[in-house]
Length: 157
Image (cartoon, rainbow, N blue to C red):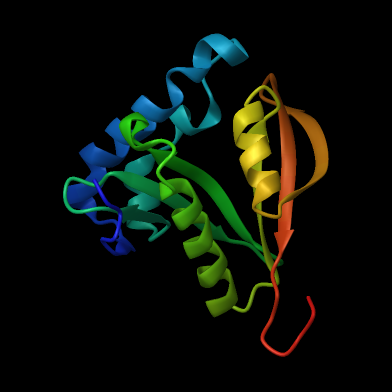
């Protein structure tokens, strides 16, 4: 399956697919990190209603990204891709979308939080230009904070 389909704002009709994608993407991590990953605890109905969830692929959605504007940056709260699509560049495309969205909102960068045991994800983020900005314990989970500064037109940022 190709992900040439547009990335669009999720609506209430996408809720079941969003919850299914999050479950499929994060349930395998439970054994690795020893507890449920934070995205499994999300209230996706509320996030969709607030306009924070974007989905990719024709209905039903194949992947999603949750973007929450903050004062300084755009928070990439969650990126989830159906497992059968891993390795096809879908996550990269969603993260590129987040960067475009941050620029459109006038934000100088994006940030995210991931579990320290999700080393494959951390490696991907680093390859995409994210850098570690700190670590902490949140609700019993050891997390890594990462950020990416975006280039601005005409600037060197």
